[in-house]
Image (cartoon, rainbow, N blue to C red; front, side):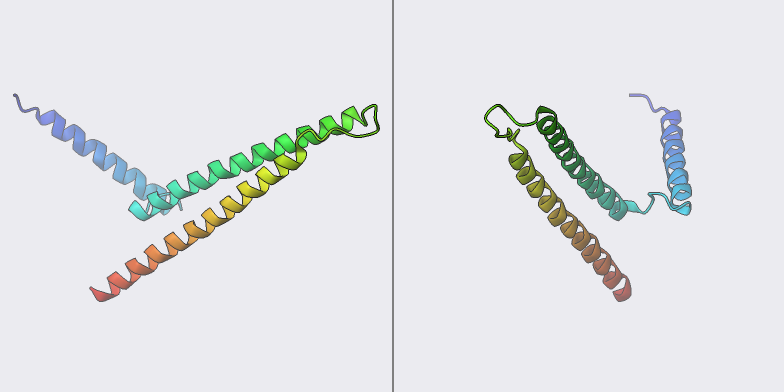
Length: 123
């Protein structure tokens, strides 16, 4: 096996470039900050996906409501349900899950931050 000195230089260059980019990003208020920021960003992305599901359900409710009003009353004087109640229930569950998740995210980040602050005082 041959030793390639360019491989080390390449690794050093990539590492230095990444650290420089992180520093510049953090200085501009971006997402630097190490593992705690990475955790917060990951949890935030998960919350975004949950929010997208809520928005998609809301669009389904809008479409069902529009279809119900476009159809008007059926021949027997009753309007069709179009599953609006079921969609409302689904959206309530999704928003409650999102609320619980956001509470947990807040608690996780607060607890880790306070733990880190406590450790830094003891050193």
